[in-house]
Each structure stands twice: as C-alpha cells, then as structure tokens.
Amino acid sequence: MKTEIAIFGGGCFWCTEAIFKRLKGVVSVKPGYAGGHVKNPTYQGVCTGTTGHAEVIRIEFDPQVISFDDLLEVFWQAHDPTTLNRQGNDIGTQYRSIILATSDIQREKALAAIRQINESGQFTRPLVTQVQPLDVFYEAEQYHHDYFTNNQNQPYCRMIISPKVSHFMQEFPDKLA
Image 1 (tube, rainbow, N blue to C red):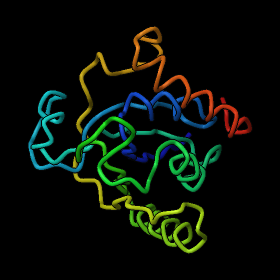
Image 2 (tube, rainbow, N blue to C red; image 1 turned 90 degrees about the vertical axis):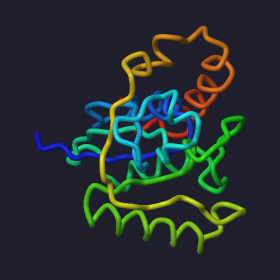
Image 3 (cartoon, rainbow, N blue to C red; image 1 turned 60 degrees about the vertical axis):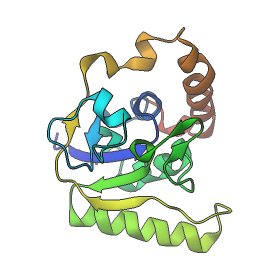
C-alpha cells in the first residue's frame, strides 16, 4: 500500500484527531505543530502564540480508499473555517485554519476547494483557511496522542470533543472505518 500525508490545522488538535482517526482509509493520525518559526516547539511554547505554529494533525492515508478531496470535505465540516484564529473558546494563531500542502497537487486542490466554497455560499462568511507548503511537522508530546480516547471523562472532552465526534458520525456514516 502506497500512502500519502495530509496536514490540517482546524483548532484544537485533540478535536481534529478524534474525528479523522475514524475515517476509512486513514492509516494514522498524529497531533503536532507546523507553520511556525521556532525549531522543536513545545506545547507550552505554542500555547503562548509566539512560535508561529498551529496545532495540526498529520494524516497518513491510503488514496485508494479515501482521497485528499474526501479529507478536505471532512476538514471543512470538522471546524469553522470562517473564523480567524479561533475555534469556539480556543483563541490564538495556534488555532488557525490551515492546510500545509505536502505537494503542488494538494495545494492546488485546497485552493480550488476554497474558491468553490466561497463562490457557492456554503458558508455565510468567506473562508479564512491558509494554504501553504509544509516546511516541518513537529510531532506533539506523547500525552496529546489519542487524547480524546484516553481522556473521555475530562470536561473538555465531554463538552467540546464528544459532541463534535457525534455530529461527525451522523453526518459522514459512509466514511467511518
């Protein structure tokens, strides 16, 4: 199996990881940091908003099962791509909507999708999602991996992530693993 990589930032990586790991064709999802200017960032540093990084997920997927376009479709629904530097109560540049393309094809597909969505009026406001080439992906500290699965009784998980996952499972039952 020849896999591909997609890197998305759509707010808190605990939320996006919990959604994307449920998709058919997704081999793995790893939380991390990208798009910044500090080498080897830490969660504490990224949370200050001074490293330039976004919380992102690295999705390894089988393009024979799920396409990059399918991942984009889920991405637009997994967060609010019209809100600048914010997702719900999570505020700061580290929560920005961003696609870090791993190829020119991904970049072109992402830009075309943004144009199409903005022209269609699918959202009441224009998308603010940034599209840029991936420079470096830094994997997050181990305690962030599978955060929702490992901390389902934590208040943030119960109040924020669980409803997002439930909504996703109802909206995309055909894409579930």
